[in-house]
Structures are given as structure tokens and as C-alpha cells.
Amino acid sequence: MSKINQFTMQDPRYQYDVSDTHKNDDQPDPGLDEILSPKSDHGEKTYEGSGRLKGRKALVTGGDSGIGRAVAIAFAREGADVVINYLPSEEKDAQDTLTYLSDCGISAHGIPGDISDESFCEELVSQTATKLGSIDILVNNAGKQQFVAELEDLTTEQFCKTYQTNVFAMFWITKAAVKHMPAGSSIINTTSIQCYQPSAGLLDYASTKGAITSFTKSLAKMLIEKGIRVNGVAPGPIWTPIQQSGGQPEEKLPKFGENVPLKRPGQPAELAPVYVYLASQESSYVTAEIMGVTGGQHLP
Ligand code: NAD
Ligand code: MG
Image (cartoon, rainbow, N blue to C red; front, side, top):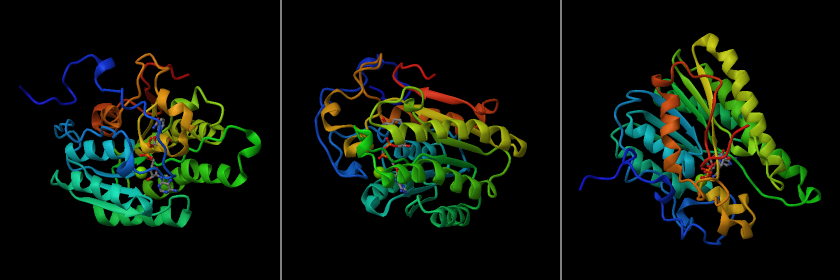
């Protein structure tokens, strides 16, 4: 029997066994893939490349786990050299991801650090450019999500940190990176279904995703003058450490993803092909676009 890969035809409702996904568990922020239970699928065993990003140089923030790990693996299997950024406390997840990347025979590097700090963002970009020679693909994917049910319990400290991580860092990294990006480059920002259908309890997070979506569309119109395309991906409910580490209230985890037409959470591996498409020249006429991968929920 031939190996199952991302092209294998099957019923998407039953592509993953979700019986175990509805497990009620919890871990501290930032969540670790190392202790995520049950495990996510990042395409480790399934993603097959076909040279779509051969020779490209990519920076992926939050590349240690979840969607970022799936994107980094797919980029590497498509032939790109990849730098991932992550928090120092995520070193084990990052090393696991880097092992998958190095197995592809490309150049892979990890640069740990906190992107809520402007000077680190500048350092991250300059180190990436030194290691890779240029930056052809920038994926602003790192994000902070902490559920707070009541308005009076949402602190200024959390509100600011969520904005610094999700919005300000994207601005700082992008501004620094554009200097290293030749015409033909692509910027991809991870926004969310939360931009369009915000949940109570995610006030700070959902509003950062609104900002990311508008930032993406405005930036696209500025940067097309340099031949750089800018797009966003809006995931629906995806099974990653962010959800199990305060992104959802614990009691909601057992039903996570059940409310979408596919009636299950998505897996990071199901996001990666969209990032590959937006990064590659195949999407040459696509800019200022937000692509939903939501299990059937409408975007606007
Ligand atoms: P994840 O926890 O695996 O990834 C988030 C990453 O953000 C972490 O790995 C961490 O490295 C990084 N990060 C957070 N704060 C940081 C900081 N201060 N400095 C540096 N890095 C920092 O979870 P994920 O779900 O893969 O999240 C990736 C993106 O997808 C996020 O932007 C998230 O908002 C978005 N998203 C996720 C879902 C979902 O259901 N999982 C849905 C919509 C959007
Ligand atoms: Mg992580």
C-alpha cells in the first residue's frame, strides 16, 4: 500500500481520530508541544514536498510548535532554508522541530527570544538575514492567547502584552525584514476566525486579530510597490498548545472544535499547504487576501 500523504483522498470529517482530542487537560503558558495531550499532527509523517520553495529563505515566528512547526516542516520539505523563533522556555519543542528541518537537507536555525521586545525583533531579523543571506518569506505567526471571562479581571498588563506580542512585534519584525526582502518575496500573517467572530473572554486576543487583518491588507497595498505580496491566514479551532495553556477555559477544551461544520478541531498539518501556496510564486496574483482554514465557519 502506498504511503498516506497530504494528497491522499479521504473523508475530511474522519481524517483524524478526535475521540482523544476531547480530553480535558491543562498546562501553563506558553504551552509546550512536549507535554501536549493528545499530540498534534504537524505533517511529520505525511507532508511531501515538490520543490515549490526551492532555495527560498524563510523566517517563521512561533516555529517551535503548533501551526508554526507544521509550516516550518512544509517549507523545509519544499526546499526552503528556515529560521524559527520561539521563547527560550520552548527550547525542547524548537530542537524537535529543528531535527525535522535538518532532515530535509536544508539550512535550519533556531533563534530564541521574546518578540514583545522591539530591540530583540530587530536582532532576530538581522541575525536571520546574516544566517540565510536574505529573507524571501516572513511568517508572523507567534501569538499570545489567554482567556479571561470577566472584563474586570482583564489586566492592563495582559492587554498590553497580548498587543505587544501579536501586533507590535509583527510591525517591528516586518519593518526590519522588508529591508532584506527582494521583489517576489511574501509576507504571511496568522490572523484568526476570532477577527470575524470574536468570542467573549478573548477581548484582547480577538481584537489583536482584527488589527492583524487590517494591518495585512494595508501593508499589502504599501509593499506591492516593492513587488512584495502580503496575505493572511485565518485558522479556525486548531489543536495546538496555545489552547491547552489558557487559550480556552478548561471546561471548553473537551468540546473544542465541535461547533464548526466539520465538527472537529483542525490539525496544524491541515494549515501548512495554505502557507506554502501563499509563500510560493503560484499565488503571484494574490495579495491583501485572508484565507480561511476554519472547518467551514465563514470569515466575515
Ligand atoms: P502555539 O502555542 O503552538 O504557537 C504560538 C507560538 O507563539 C509559541 O510557540 C511561541 O513560540 C510563540 N510566542 C508567544 N509569545 C511569544 C513571545 N513573546 N515571543 C516569542 N514567541 C512567542 O499555538 P498555535 O495555535 O500554533 O499558534 C500560532 C498562531 O496561530 C498564533 O498567532 C495564534 O493566535 C494563531 N491561531 C491559532 C488558532 C488555534 O486554534 N490554535 C486559531 C486561530 C489562530
Ligand atoms: Mg510553542
